[in-house]
Length: 463
Ligand code: 4AD
Ligand code: MG
Image (cartoon, rainbow, N blue to C red; front, top):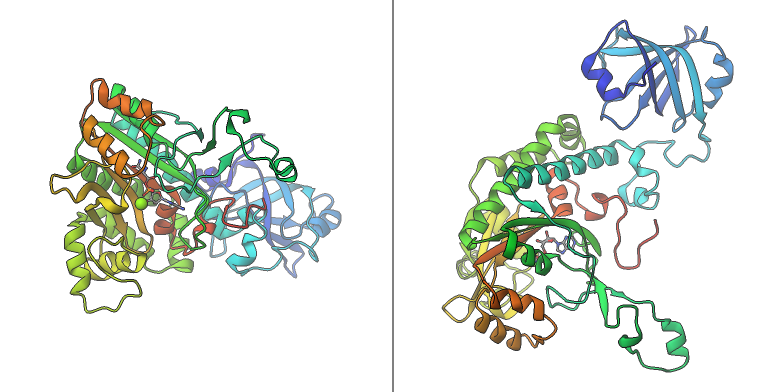
């Protein structure tokens, strides 16, 4: 007999047919009339499958003891219309096989309603909960939608390296990659000599695939890279991870306007697909995590994003009558309290902030003629804050070299990046979208550690 997933079975509803289902027991209860009800989940859908086991099933007394919450089981039986409320169909077991029991006194998920903090410490078991199952399915739907969006527009998926020797953001937040024996060097009081290291120079984990993606865009047109990204920033916030996933499209012949338009279309497409593909999971988030979440997402899908220059944003914040913890002054970076005010209070929808002061933005952003701002753009959304950072890139060789000098960067170290401006340079632009930030938005979860399977944060990389 062919094994059926619960999701297939609930959609096709072949009432009367024989089925073989496998999964984990969520709950079990026994009726006085001499049969047991088991709620089975196999991860294929939010919904459980109800299994009815009559005591006449061979081995009933033996397997019933093993059929605890968390146990894994195979059931062969017949699919029937369910007389009770709560499900359309149920399986009447003819055969039950327990793969593995789970000791009721020890199984950490024996009881329901654990805090997310507690579940973070058992990240190996949390996929078995309603919440983390739903998050995993939505995350999967988002990733599929990301590829669908770019593939349908003729973008090439390129793989940029994880180990790199250039700091894209210039913010010095890189994790070093080395095979040098640091303990021995320290013991012998010897200084580090990177020429002796594995790559013959200092190497790190990438903070962004952008610079390498630009090399492909400046030869193949529209590309995107999508992969893990690493940042050693010591910020213990609910929106920062040390390892997160970023999607970075890079487009030849795009200017900042084109970039903003693509960013909006991209976000709207991905959100739309995710709620279409995961209606049960979204219903759960609305019922149990955040009542407003679907409304917020639909609002984003259906409205134009507000475009506000940095200079206008400073004026708005100054005239807001709000007291902020951090100062609002032209030339200072915006803090999340300012971003939240703009997107949640002032506009009540996503805001694209653009033309930031060059003083706190990276070297690669295209300089505006005013001499003070760059063609940067950040997309801010209610709840999750900044989900996209991007810009038009500086394609003029002389301006780029001047900016690198201003940022104390050695053009020799970025010689290949500079070369793109020497040979057939083109205007181009791109951005990076933080996958986990999108998931915060979609699920209503408030801590970014809960929307990635195995979170890495300062002092935390257990699993
Ligand atoms: O604004 P960022 O730093 O931009 C870049 O890295 C550019 N090189 C991207 C590009 O133009 N190709 O990061 C982009 C996005 C942020 O808007 C945010 O969504 C996410 O990446 N992000 C993080 N997500 C989780 N944890 C962190 N520590 C993050 N840092 C950035
Ligand atoms: Mg940013």
